[in-house]
Amino acid sequence: MDPNSQPDGVPSTNATTATTTMTTTTNSNNNIKKEVESANNIPNNNNNVTIKPENDESDSSSSSFYKPPEPSYSRANSLKFHTLVKRFDIVWAQRKRASSSNRNIKKASKEDLLAHLLPKELMKYLRGGSPFPVLRLMMPDKDNVRPHSGMKEKMIASVWGDAIGLNKNSPDYLKLTNYNDPMYAGPTACGDLSLAIFEVIHKRHPSSSHGSIGTRNNGSNVTIGEINSLLDELAAIKRMSMTTTTSNSSSYNGYRTKRQMRARWVEKLIHKNLSPLEHKWIVRILLQRLEMGIGSESMLSYYHPWATDLYSANKNIRTLCSTLCDPNFVRRKKEQLRKEIDAVENHNRIHHLPQSHEPATLNSTIAPMLSMRTSFESFLTDVQKRHRAYVDALDANDPLRRSLALMFPSFVSEIKLDGERILAHVKRGVVKLQVGVV
Image (cartoon, rainbow, N blue to C red; front, side):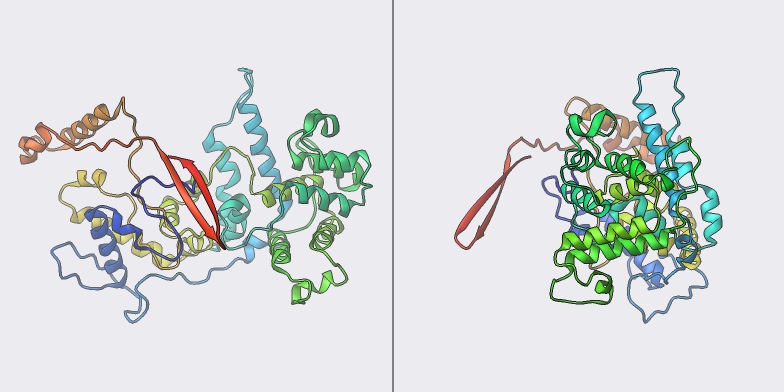
């Protein structure tokens, strides 16, 4: 589903408003209110259950929403970048293997691939530190801390060709700029710019060519922290004015265009002796398309069972990691969930309440609660199964079994017809109409 598309009746999820939670059910509002009150130890005047964590160390005079302390990033930043991209390449190769029709090829499960990307040894090595420097490279499209570099395929091909020193009429330069043409790119790299750059650097820089799967590979000594700093530096070039000098622009003095600055940036990668494999995955990170066959939601769920809910309430990976690295938050959250289960008399209500209990915060993008996915042919059966599962879970002597609402369930269905949505832009007397099918 397109993240920019919204169903009718669902408000837009912009970063300046958190009032979209008002569109959820009353139970959702009560849960959010109870979560906020329990986190800040505020007494509840209603009849709802008030959950106060024991030994709450939070300051009652502080902000109404929890703000995690800044964790340590030193151990995550000290990891070698080539170690990470080797794992990327193995998972990417497994995806190609999974698409093969050969039944004799053993295909790794999704759980095995996630365990390879985020091994348990990584969490032990971090020793309570934040894995944010690693996760932001695994999910570059979800990293809203670092702005986009502004480089697309055409610019990346030209910049890498200039940095390597290729003649514009040479076969290697034409391979980069015409990577979609099999006559120039060849059968292996056609349609994939990162593979085209990999092959060009592999041929021209044999001293750093040990990077493909199955070969001896020591890679470079560049760390993840250095790569993130270089990517921040590249993103700053997009906002850099030609007449403005900053602390980061000292190494770019004498370059007149941003293309020359970006080529100088790629030269830094070459001088650091990055392997062709590392160049390949840096290009994919810049394009924000790793194409490993594993979504960001699966990575977050594997990283921590609470990560998905936290990310839905605050779409910021850095804040998410900082929150889960706070032992006080983890202790209060576990105590809250335990008391919440004990306070609910009918545990079956859990299946009919929103699964996320994280409060929305101001100036943070959120994901609203959407309806259950169904179809016109199966929604009657889905509703029947939902009611039946609830009734079967009740005790034999529960008076709810004799409820007419469960014995003869009824509902209201609103049929949505297909149509078109027209968005009008008026600027200086020019009217533009954008039409989208809904």
